[in-house]
Image 1 (tube, helix red, strand yellow):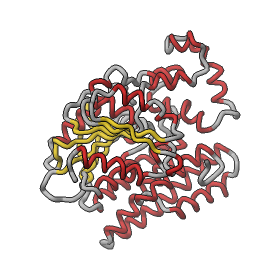
Image 2: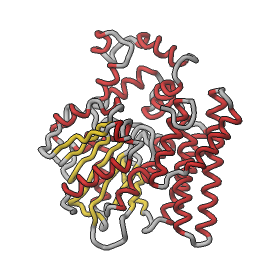
Image 3: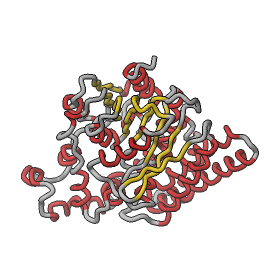
Image 4: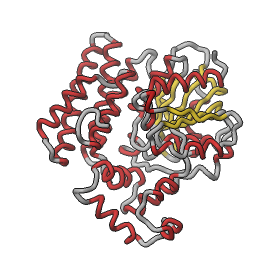
Length: 411
């Protein structure tokens, strides 16, 4: 269902931002008028629409960020942080359709602008958000510690791992606001292949996510504000695969949340590839020419823009690949079936009706080694169908945090 405009790709980006209005990440009129400017200047031309999209959402982000600057200078901290939070959303929305096999100037600029607004937001938040430096394989990752309050007593803490095309800015509004309202500290980070770590550091997604999460937990568990006995790993979108993978190697976790729960990515991928049974069994050891019809279709005017974006724009950049076969092969390396039995902490998986990514959540549930595990369904009738319950985040948070409160005995 289109929410804002008759363009599946761009409507997906815009509605995704609109849904964050619930927690202050957007305002309805700001999105509507920005889209009107896009359509008014670009018409039906797809390339012109992308150019106009980046230009107009950047203009809206800059305007809203300037509101935050003025409020901050006058000492209006609440107004400042509200404006900065919306500005981060609009900067991110601006660059989403300009993903490409390489980082172009538009993507680099918008990523830097989004982070700049986030740093301003961090200073105006109450209490101020702390930037943590996480040593990682000769470089470092930046994490944000968003506190529920500034009291000395350590608090239970969510460590949130991202998905395939999100950022810490989007996680802030999607996770941190709801967590801190309930007394949880919240840590947000972009790992390899995600957000600034991908765009500015050139680090690509890796299948062994345990080597990403463990360094983050090393830093978080040592922080005096954090109750190291009540650490929760939370992943959304592709993070619903990455978090369980990491949890299989982490005895420090008090709980795991995967939204949605997922199984080996190879299974879902091969089910939708135009290959015969023998080629699927041998994949990725196949003749690359077998994918030439798929490549030709994706490059044709008949291909759905969202499909082209996933396979020819986003995928190669995230994985650092140059061919369609290499991109698909890299995605197929994401496996959890061999380690799921090692997950010993209490585990909550979500599964929303109408979300094909959640279709294999029951398989993960069966394989998880913990005795305390649950799959929480969300339905279209509740308004919660679709990926990551985007249209019903308040319902997701009610069920998720009520469960966490009981598991961590916080009632």
